[in-house]
Length: 137
Image 1: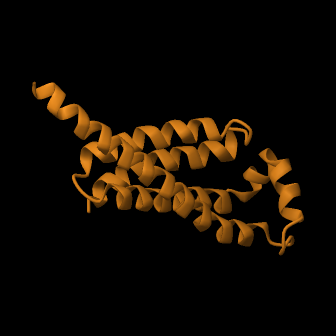
Image 2 (image 1 turned 90 degrees about the horizontal axis):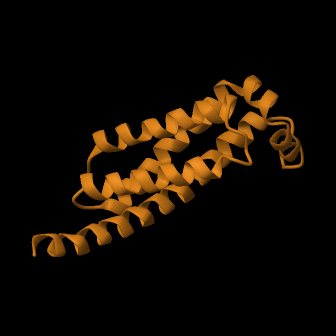
């Protein structure tokens, strides 16, 4: 397991955590996340010789720590920039505590996004392995 790789790659998640509080609107957010998933999956495939899916899963969980932490700690700024999300949270169970909802939903999103990164990393590792023999020829 390459913990240093996961920690370094999670800095993309930290940057997005802060950006999603202040700059990146929710309707645009999936695009930079997709780019981050693709880049980090490639870097996992290159930097982790084994267990690439597990590295992706752990990266998703680490990203969830950054994002959930930033959204909870910077909640007032998040609320000011994300009125639609606040309205949606009012319709969920525990509407009086959006921070608690973030703490509950964050890890679920972390696992899902980690599985996506893991699958992307498996695909990238497969593509890199296919490419090696052709480059040697």
